Every structure is written in structure tokens, then in C-alpha cells.
Length: 532
Image 1 (cartoon, one colour):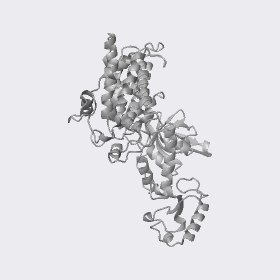
Image 2 (cartoon, rainbow, N blue to C red):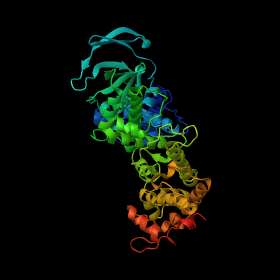
Image 3 (cartoon, helix red, strand yellow):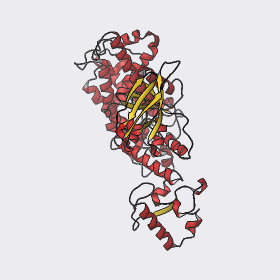
Image 4 (tube, rainbow, N blue to C red):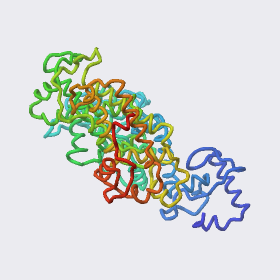
């Protein structure tokens, strides 16, 4: 490399000889990606494993052979760290390809973790345990501490990763880009300042807090983690504490999708508690949402929120929801066209009334397919699928993504961006989507008016929508997405340039013109004309 006096002093033949020697030492593999190197047909680089600035030697003992591409695209100057980050990215990619959120679970499975059940017993103020499945026949014991405020009992123990699992009930979060910073920090080596937290459930030690710290350690080769283990904890309390840490207290960065998922879990716990307190079986849902709200008097506001967010989560996370594959659940990002925040503000909040708590039993007409919440869920998923199928599938290319599309086109470099991709990108921008979704609601409401039928305007999707109306919705979507404006590249630096607010596009749709008078549409949006 350019900063190596040793390498700069080699002749071409000597450099090739060193490359071949390293190639043999590395079993013909790239130091970073671990894949085969063919010296005859592939470009390679020799680089310092530990950078000179970090105390590495300028000597063959500190050299690694890499693919030229891997070396240029490495995420850290230290080849050991670059290798770990590459391996982590492969784990993340494999999980993403399966439409799963990458998490500690996937890192454990890729590194030999999550294999065995934890065997222990409690005697007085000590927990006694063993890890004999790994061949360790010792019997260990640790002191149990009781928290003075919560009464929760915990112990500090070192656990082989074979006994560790990810807790996707209390903490369904995935891992994010900050993990690379942790890996680099631990590799320096700077110490971990906070332990991961775990609990035992059905014989498994589940980590519910500190999964990023656990991932960083495992990727750096740590085979045993020191945990603070909760013993027979109040699960509902832990879920609520974890949820509040990511929402009310802002201690950790929980995105909205994760909060909704945790609220879904909390609602399930309240339902279970209601059943237990009323001597009902776990299959008996003959009580209403309102009865649950009234029963938990001290937290009525929370329960109402849990109910609505549980419904939102069931729609979002449904395996039948094809739109889910195009939602970025951790912020806006550059790969997918729809952030979860936009999805919630437009479709979920647009059609699920946050004030509606049902008086009918939770299992009301469930067998007949006439349960209001079930109808709402199924129809909103149908709408999501309609949007995915008409606008996104085989049209939007995640490899192109969303990064600086308008700037690229405005600069005259957008020839590789297909019209279909541009249309999808523009339609799912929050300020635009917020306004056109309102017209879908208008299509539905008008159908009731024309038929002379009363409807609950605040809960349109809790009523069965006729097939003719679904045809009208599909026709509206097709006609709307085919408006010339969505393919008009001349507007990249004007109408679509920069951030605009909801009112900007509301004015365009209702008048055909931007607030400054610029003509954008030939005519204002007319629902009747758009469904013909």
C-alpha cells in the first residue's frame, strides 16, 4: 500500500511472491470476505491487518491479502474489524432476504449460539446452575440481589452463547447501523459500561436489553457474555418498563413501529390478566374492549392506546401484507420508498379511528366473518396489497432506492431511473401520499351516499366494502398513478425539488395549481371522473 515503506520497496516479482505466500497462508481466501481468491484472474491488494497508526508493524507478519474490491469498500482501516463488519453484513443480508428483521437472534444462530436450555435452581439467596451441555461439568452459584424499589430478583452470571437467545417479546427491535461503532469501540479495546439484561423463560435465557452490545461482543469472538439475569420477573412490568424507556423516557431510540409492537404485547398481557381475574379461559373473549378499559381504571388512557396500536401492529406485521416489504422500519432510509412514520400517518391513522373503543365482545361474530376489528384488519391489508401490486411490485427497484433522485434527474443524470420507479417514489412521499389517500376515503364515502346508505365515516373499514367499491378504488389508483405529473422530469428542480408540506399538495390536488400559481395538473382531482 502507499503508506508502507516495506511494500513500496518491493520489486514487482517480490510483490507477487509475497501475494502468493499470503494466499497460501490464508488458504486461498480473502482476508476480509473469506471467499476464494483466484490469483490468475482477480485483482488483489496487500494491506496491513492492524493499521500503522494504531501501532501495527510494517512487516509481512502484519499483512493480509484481499480482493481489491473488498479492500476498497472495507468499512474500517483495521482488517480484523473490516472482516467482522463484512460477516455481520452477510448475516443482516441473509435475514433481510428472508423478510426478517436482523437481530441478535440471527447473530447468535450464525455463531453457534441459541442451542441449549438453562438448568438451574434457587436455594435461599443464591442461584445454582450448570452448563454441562457444553462439556463444562462444574456447578456454579451466584448471589441473588433483590431490588429495593421493584422487588425484582437478579443475579450476575457469565453465560456461554449456546444458552443465550434473543427476546423478541420484550425487545423486538432489530440491530441498526450503530452496531458498527460498538464493534470498533470494543475492538480498541474499550470496556462495555453496561451489561446486557436477560431473563429465563421456558428454560431459555432471553436477552431483552443490550442486544447491540451482545452482538458486538459475539462478532468479535466472545463466547461467554456477562449478564444481569432476572429471576422469575414480572414480565408485564419488564415490557412496560422497556416500552416507556423507548417512548416516554427517551432513554433509547425506539422507532414508532417497535412501540406499536410492544403495545400489542402489553394489550395481550392485559387481556390475559382480565381473563384470569374474571375466571375466564384463555380462549374466552366474550368481553369488550370497553370492559377492559373500564377494568383497568388507573391506566385507561394507556389501555386505549394499546388497543389501537395492537390493531395497527396486526395489520403492519401481517404476513399477508405485501406492502410491508417496501416499508423502512428504522427511519426513512434510502432503500425503500415508504417510512413506517409515513405509513402510519397516511394509511393507519387515516383509516383507524384512535377514539373508537368497541362495545361489542372481542369475539363478536368472529366465526361469521363480521367482527369489526377483523373486517378492518382484512380490508386494510387488502388496500395495502392493492397499492403494492399496482404501484410497487415489479416497478419500484430497491437497488435504485430513493437517495437524491430528484437532484440526480435535475442534474440530467437520471436516465437509469425508469419512469415506473420515479412514479412509485413520488407517490409514496409523505406530503403527497397524505393527500391522495384522502381521495380513497372519499371514493368509499361517496359510494354510500350514492347508494343512499348511512355509514360510520370515522370507521369506514369496519364495515364490509362491496366489490364494486373495491373496483372503484383500483380504478382510482390506476388513473391517479397515470397522471402525467408523476413522470414529468422537468419538475424535479421545481415542484418536486426540496421539502413541501401537506397543504402544498392539498392545494395542487384541489385546484390543479401550486400555491404560487404554477400549473401542475390539467384539472383538479375529481373522484367521480377518476373512477370512470
